[in-house]
Length: 304
Image 1 (cartoon, rainbow, N blue to C red):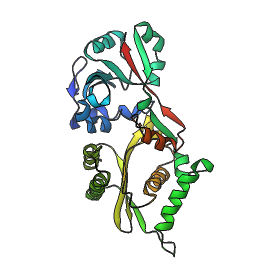
Image 2: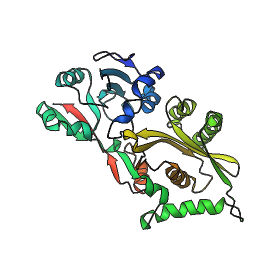
Image 3: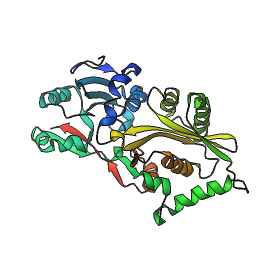
Image 4: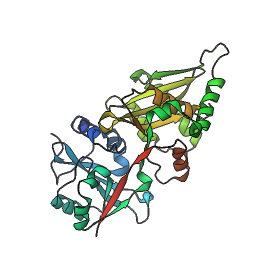
């Protein structure tokens, strides 16, 4: 094993994927951050380091950037797989400002005891992952999806020939199609006028096979138009969409990509995780319009 036992930490790096990946998708909650791909792709932003608690459990240490809130940078730790012993938690709080991304399964195993130890828990609503029934996103049933269904229909009407032949095409992402997806990503950045998660998305495409991702690439009238990329979570019952990029010159493209991706997934994925809104009100409203069936709740903790 490369990862040292606690209290030792090393930076997250690509070579750790074979040691970490088999265990992280087996956590029950399906926290979108707790995949090797997500930790690796955002390692520079959060300066992630990892320690081994037991053979199948890890502690992630990171730094919250100053632009995430008041008070400048703050250090945090996460426990994706298991609740550490009291002594380990006490040591972690000596060197970190707070405990982040605590899922329900961790709290269920001992919240009362943890509060007795002097920890105060707060819901982290901005980081709740949005959960949707895969069947709902694939079929867009009933009145509640009327507007989404209309936009998908408008897309089909605009890009289908009179004889019923689609003027759009979808292919599974392969190594040969990565340059096409990168071309879409660069046009997306130009269209938006900001970088956003451009760097992470670029690296996700370039290393998608090694990061255990699967995706789709879309063309409209022969032009590269969109792509999406994600992976399995929660013991194989959930699929997390980590990246979804489309060019808005094609009306209804985002709704079409969302619906097509859900419909293309195997039926054993009962839920789709579309990650957090990060407190962005516009993004929150957009995610709510797809009628989530629930959330992957997360909490933070401070030592009193």
